[in-house]
Length: 473
Image 1 (cartoon, rainbow, N blue to C red):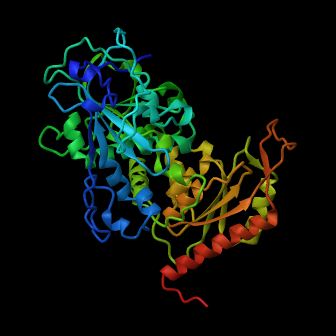
Image 2: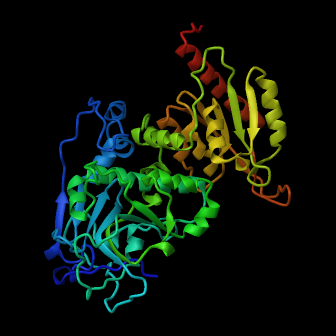
């Protein structure tokens, strides 16, 4: 179903919404000098500390994990038509972390009218442009389950016969999100985070915001995205499948709504955000960059913890008993003989508190509270290790690596960026083993398990003692 229609002036009809005629194209490549890494003042978003970036590495890690990611994205953008009051136009942003770029776009003065199919053909995605700052729309990436701004633009139709809206006629800004719809907590978290990054980038891109109408709020407050209502495609499937759906409020402070409830009429700005598949953390999925710090990650974790109202545990003393939490599942993706292995771990480390948890039986607040009280988290490769982002710095993550065509390193990167010790051990598929009628069973070497977890416990205990001034032999 077509989502959006726009009234275009004759000068912009040939542009067909975005970047389709270079004669009407204005390209902005803003490259202001970045503040030195020793700067301590926060950026315009107020949550990503420049001081934290002072401890991030140069090169790849600096560009993907900190403020420079936001600054670079915010400074590379293009507008479809010269800005004219009331005229439909569009701004697209781009970052080039890989061979294929990542984009998001914002429409100004977009008209939504699902009943008016019009006679104007859909946007042409094949037109090529002789520019290098922002790709032409046919090159925009498609991500998981056909998500991304390129996919969204292909559902947009134009209404060139309509007149431009009068000043004050348009509704407040909205964000239209096309969800992957899997309910997977890792994918859902990155979708939410990408939408929040979109707001953070726009906050830093005042010249672009002035073009698309995202200006100061009533009362003179600087724009912070709180005037943006989120509307979702595929919302019903995600609403029932994702355990963290309510975290979407973190993006603009408002609960999302289904596009089926989107009112007809003109909208001042329509944000088509960075897709979850375009999140910078996917860049580390198959290659470890060993980044030791990320202000992007720390900021998002702080926001999520505050959203769920979780109070962190007190700072550990050197006498603290180490808590080991092992994530298990009772019906699928099970570890063969897991009860026996956990019992042996109890016996091997009687001074540690060892617990096995089925996190699927907990709500998100309980899950975060559990992880924040955990010193060593042990789990099988999978979305449940998303919780590693909530481990306190100085903790440890032990990943049991499931056999896969390639070895994903997302959770290793996540742990290192949080200041968490990471270790892993192999797990072997047991295709002929079934329990409760379900396969997907893995086997681990008990001795390797005890040794790996034991090393993690010892490392955490040593860090706690050193932090409290204990003298170690």
